[in-house]
Length: 280
Image (cartoon, rainbow, N blue to C red; front, top):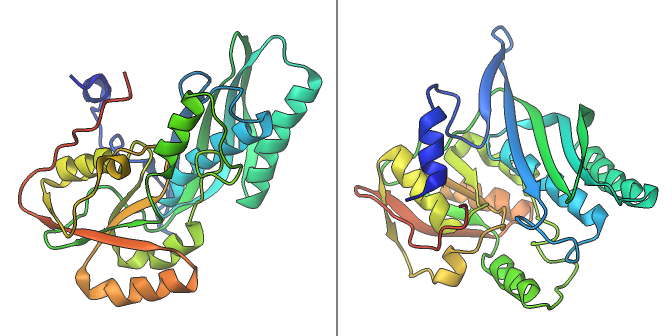
C-alpha cells in the first residue's frame, strides 16, 4: 500500500489539495491568485551532509520548492523558512546556510518574510513559497490526444544518487546538487499548456498522478527504460498540450535553449507506476 496516498486521502477533504500548490483567490478584480506550496528537505532522507556543502543544501532546498510554483505558472514572491539546526553548528555553518538561502531568493526575486528555527540532532528544512498567478496550471486539464512532454534529459539524478550512496563523488554541476529550473521558458509557453507538474519523484510516478487525476492512459512513442522513468530528484517539467501548439512550443523551447522530449499522447486507459516506492 502507498502510505503517502493513503494519508493524503484522509486529509484531502477540499479542492485545494492535490496539486503542486494550493491556489487561493487574492483579488477578484485583478483576477490574481495566491499559490501556496511547501516541501520538506530533511537530512538522511533527501540528503546526507557529506554529499553537499551547507550552502548547496540551502540552495537546493529553495529550488525544489520554487519548482512547485513554476509548474503552476506562478511567480514566487515570498518564503517562510522552518529550520531544525544541529546544536553543534558554528556561526560559520549558519553563515553558509544563510548565504545559500539568500542567493536563490535574490535570483528569483523572493523576499524571506519569516519562519521558525529549533535545535535538533540533524538538519531539517521546510520551506513555504507564496506565489502569485493570474492563470494557474493544474495537474488536471489533460485532454485525450494531448501530447505528453518533459523538459531536459532524465536519468542522471538516479545515477548520481547511486554513486553517492556507494561512497563516490559527483560533478558539482550535477542536477542532483543544483536542479535546473526552466522558469522563463515555462511562463512563456504557459498559455499553450493544459496540465503540468514537476518531476520530483520520477517520470513514471508523475505519469501515474496525471493518469489518476485525468482518468487517462498513455500511448508511448518509444520505450522508456526504468533507469530513466524511475529517476527522482530531476525537477524537470512534465506537461501536456494540444498537438496544434506543437510548433509554437518547440520554437519557444529553441529560443530558451530548452530540450523538449515529446514522448507520448493521452489515450483512454490507466497508467500505473512500477518503480520502487520511495516515500514510506
